[in-house]
Image (cartoon, rainbow, N blue to C red; front, top):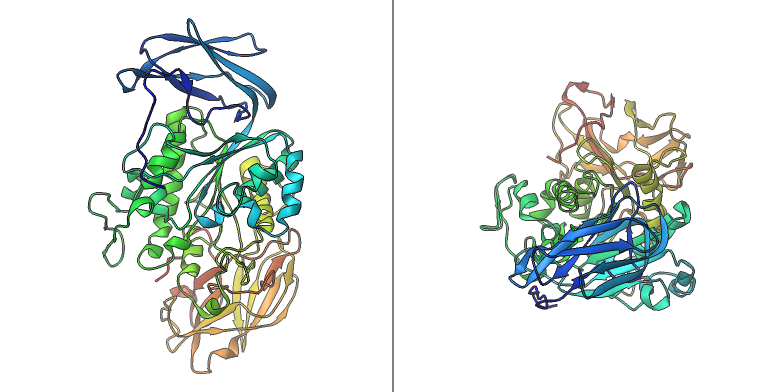
Length: 532
């Protein structure tokens, strides 16, 4: 895991590091891009896809060294299928990649819960034994490398393009292959029926800033030169970390080299490393900015990747049982993962989808409770939202329930979820109200006035909370749900959608100043709720 230095063998005629036998290239209507190296700038190479009539011509451009040029070719749109052999001819030599499929290419990235391998999950032996049936899914894993400057190509490869089997999918703990990536790709293939290419690039324990380019960080006032944060309230100094944990180090070595490749989308599991002060308060900027920047740069470099490509993420899972009373850190990041809207896609995070995981604790995980072994439910929830957002395939709602309105009457508070939902209530916990002496006062999300308000009754579209938890001389001025590091036991969230079994996401809302003395208003989820 040493710092990487770009090393290119002088004078070679070769494909770039992540073009190899058994790979998947992006299918039509997008165009796949192929590139590599040749010694002589200005030389013209011939590229052919075996079985197709068209002959492509690629001129070698100057490369990183005087005797190392770079060639690139954009293929015509090729529909899903294969296998193909792609040949590149010089005057005297031919290089080839074989068993190439065309389908959808997905990037999988993040920290340790994305790195968590199929070998480590529940029912691993069963999953690994069945993996070899999925010959149309292909796997590639980037090695852990970091760099202070952007690299042109990957310095190291952990796992070259491979067909799935018990070894390539389940090499061992923390190696390859990512369980969330594999399970999501497998479910996607079962739904779509054509090849899926999965590129896994991750590093455990790393913050979002390490995966972000300087351009993305600058959008949030975070500068590489001074490590200062200008947007934060109050102004804070960012303490620089070393190696893979520092600004842009993993972007430079593990993402930037992939930009020339045409991809369909990306999924992301990260945020635990950003759950402490001061970084947790920056995540509502740094995470959306990273998504925007990845999209812009993949599109600009390849010329083919959709500039708004679909991006999915996993909302943070629980951590440990003693954290059930912890109300800061993970809850903040979960909220900020949605840019403070509580759901995606939204007007700030368009074409983004998520899997809620706050009801999937694994306090007995041998890899630590921060690493739950149930990645199957995570992948399935990603699939449901991903099919809707990334593929426009849905049979109905694809998120968990959010309330439409709240009303207070006597000692009860009613949350109405609207006719689009059919609610399943699994327990009576999870809700809190904020009690204040002032009916027009404000309630900070860390105020001690937050008090548990149990569910006392429910219907298929509404839940009624006990409002008497606030004494008679106090007023309810805020409400929130699942605002704990570990709010629930396994699959015992308070509210689920009957239609899709998806859990309600966490939310927080404060009474509008014009709402009067009673706690009655319609939620406006079209705007972010900033944590005061």
